[in-house]
Amino acid sequence: MTAIDVNLTARDGQVGEPWMCRLCRDFEIKATITKANIDTDFGWMQVRLEGPLEEVQRAITWLMTTGLHVDAEQRSVGA
Image (tube, rainbow, N blue to C red):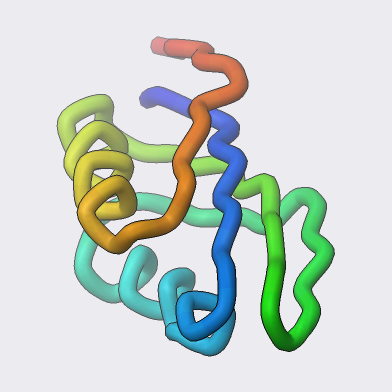
């Protein structure tokens, strides 16, 4: 099982998109918002992604294709 904390930053039209819904629906991971600050034209959130390493990597790759700024904070791999 892998857990990675990811910082996501959104601007303008990206703010209102259902990113978290798609993460939970399309990937076999658990996504937990640990911190967030969202306004109408700018927002950021720190999200912990947990699951099999391949699925977490696929989810992060998908996030990078959305136009969001994606920055991985830390990584922990457990048994």
